[in-house]
Length: 437
Ligand SMILES: *Cc1c(COP(=O)(O)O)cnc(C)c1O
Image 1 (cartoon, protein in one colour):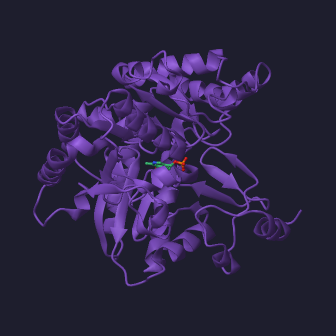
Image 2 (tube, helix red, strand yellow; image 1 turned 135 degrees about the vertical axis):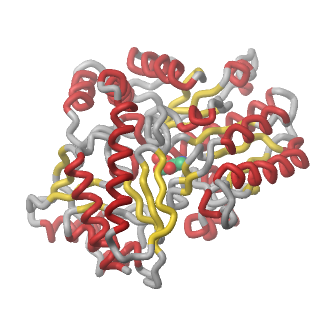
Image 3 (cartoon, helix red, strand yellow; image 1 turned 180 degrees about the vertical axis):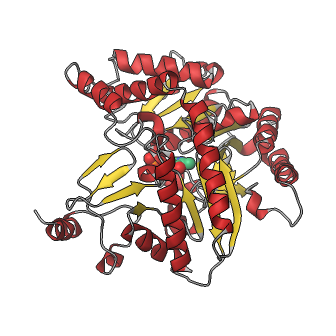
């Protein structure tokens, strides 16, 4: 089967996500045949370095032998059983491990990030009903936040291009000033700006807490907003404010969890524990769809009752899928055996210092060069309205899969990327950026 044929069959049969399909008339799909390490290969043997970890899910490379073997073993034992009324070893073991790592308990599973957001929102709302505080029904989130595309998740998302069309369908929520350091005043430190944003949060919560169920936040990095990074003091203050006014804090660690920001979970940078944590993306190393929400014993106990409807009656068909859980267990085992967080510090430092040096030697207008763990980003100042698309195409032509968000160019590679692969990634990216200004 030729590449051409596959592309046209895909255009006829598949509705691609987050895509205006008509744009593929002059902007072809990329047909991937296989993956290995940081590389994706097309049918003709051309390879592309996956600098975005396949939408932020891949941690230890494509075709990872340990994760693959764990799934194969599980496949010979039990592929799936419903989790209502049944249980199995992989889901129990994974829940125990996640509790050890997060300090929260009773993992509730779904298959994607948006569903995890829905679960946390519904659990929070339902907790307040079960606790005789039925007025606490509203949610707040940050400006420029991203929590997924289903109606509840989109309601607390604040990205106009995804949200505006569906506005009449969404539940009301309020957005708090984002501590994204790029929005700080000239000369203001990241910490001062974060504290200033937290003050505004406190004013809002002080006035509205009687109606507020929860504040949902992406800890440390607002990834979809273009890798908007902020000082951890904001999380510390948010935790204090939420506790003081009895508002749940939901940590959406779907993108930042599992080592992406340097610590296992981003909340650790502020030494806080949220009331709910939402996990997905890297949880299976990028192998199978899985998400989880963990919460406190206090919240769990408010559902534990003789009355059936006080329980959390939410479900998804593939909840706790054993194959996905076995991939997640293998992923967590790699973190332990390979001292991944320590190793990532070196990789992150190398990636950032190399980028600094290379940027100094090119003549392009770059602002806000920044990093947080295994995310490195900068913004370009350009008049080209199609910068993101042009840069994507030019990088691809040289063997690099890069997906700029607006004028933000970011690197979020699999953790196993080598120094020579980093060199290739940065050199190719800067060539593509320069040619797209
Ligand atoms: C990707 C993402 C989601 C949604 O996850 P899906 O699996 O795409 O539904 C939610 N929150 C954050 C922070 C994300 O990055």
